[in-house]
Length: 175
Length: 173
Image 1 (cartoon, one colour):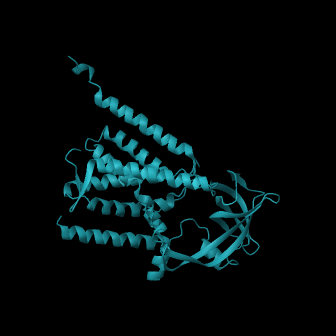
Image 2: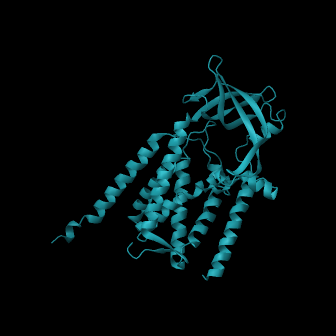
Image 3: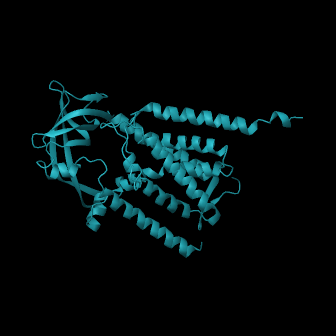
């Protein structure tokens, strides 16, 4: 394949990648209202089953409930720190845990998966199941840290066998 | 999803075991497969190029999550394969990248989800598959997953080393 065709094909594939992402976001895979739908029309989704991923804002151990805040963000501009996002809208929810199966230990700032039912004009989730995905900051540090090690190993293996040239990746002579 | 350390080592183990029967799957292609195992998580581009930025530029809702799907990894494997210089290597690069990416999604499937179901319908996009129940084996920060991946990779490495260096009895003088 000559280089013009190759570049053209690369362009087409990159375009298709964006196309797939636009198409995918419009599809409804889980049959639960999205975060934006919950924030946007709380009455319409009242009584619906929900499945949300969210960070714990507040824990009330005595009453077995937690508070989470759903946020709808938008692109606010480019700043010194890169892309800046701002919160367009937010919605506070109380999650009742009394009847829920909880896997893991919930702490302030824990990142949870919550499955339950919305009630009281979607201000409350009666949780059926809660999974603590990242219990604390250390879990995030671990996830990202070990992922970087994984990426380093993959790149090390790859460049032991391949090298970059102006025309693309070619085998190393000594590989 | 599992973290990248586990994905890369499982891809190494799967590639090495496959190489016992697939003659062209040499270490150079296993290395490509290990890179392929990272492809579905290119959706992390969201951290540097947020979907909200693209949404505001084009006026249509956008998300990078479509990359963590069958359609997404087929396209990404195609892009990756075209980065190889020789046409003869592009075909194998595509297969190796796609193999690594698919291994990533298979390993992601039995994760724990609060609604009790796998994300098969999203990963299989555009294939219209349902969401079967998940065995719920792990969540991303579970340390044992990386330990198992490391152990598996070491066992496979040792077996591979043994197979490569043993001389068949009948050929011995």
